[in-house]
Image (cartoon, rainbow, N blue to C red; front, side, top):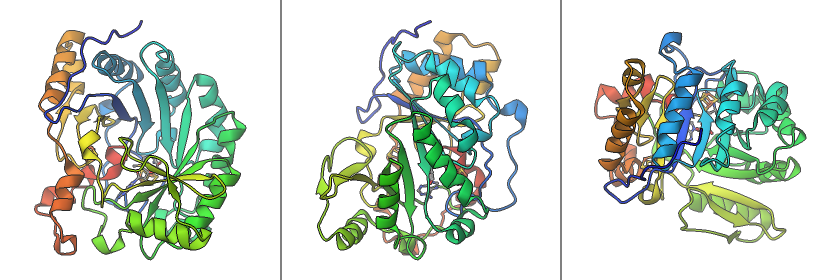
Length: 349
Ligand code: SAM
Ligand code: SF4
Ligand code: SF4
């Protein structure tokens, strides 16, 4: 049944609630250095992870408050066995208030399930890929799965998906010499490559400002290779990614979350795998929706709870972090920021 949009709450900076990222599982089959600690992590108990019907019900609540875009993420979404069923359930809302159903994945398991997800109704896929070099991949992700990821990326267009994206976190000393190679690889897939500035979400993964390669540096590196400064298509627009065209028309994006954050237009909400609503990637805390959901709250009560959170939202996490510069001297203020449960993999990126 179509979840009628009842009203669209606007937060304290007049930002509407439009986008929901659902972390369907906290676990992952990689251990990317910038995202999660290698060890000493206690996964959520299975009983605490939202079930398919619970996800479906919460999506209805969010849609009734204005959400039109849903992205499935993780952890690694493809290790959740019922992902095709989740996709199928949510896809039934497309054209009924939901306009966009996408997924972000590390691609390791994509080759075997891209076709099933396409058939289930998934619209778009973003695959994360930071390097084309297998040995670098292993060092960065602490797992030897590069070939599987490349195979997975090629399976995406083969399954009939269009609008595919490749997301690359650019880190100094790690992969900043591969930007043109990645653009060329994206061209062959085909997929639009987006370079993401390294963010210091969490605090357990050793972020340092010196490892951040800024948008300006990314553009300079691309220009050096192609002999021409890329042409901006929507620079300064509302979308997180600024898009640029190369002389031959190839388009790539830059997401400058660290040096030029886009908090002023941020319309994103996030649901963790155990049902905590976060209103910012940098949030130290959120509102537990699973508890009232399981205690029998009505749709109206859940809607009121979510609307109330959004109406009082004043997050501008990345902008606040930027204001704390110089960051080279920034040390986590308290032990909370070293808590692995605050890392990127709990909140979907
Ligand atoms: N496992 C899936 C994947 O890797 O695509 C989905 C979850 S992952 C947390 C989502 C995105 O967050 C990935 O593209 C990843 O590169 C990005 N990410 C993780 N840590 C990051 C960081 N410190 N800075 C910028 N992006 C980060
Ligand atoms: Fe896993 Fe994605 Fe985080 Fe890498 S970025 S550890 S693949 S959740
Ligand atoms: Fe939105 Fe927070 Fe990211 Fe800013 S830092 S864009 S408020 S999620």
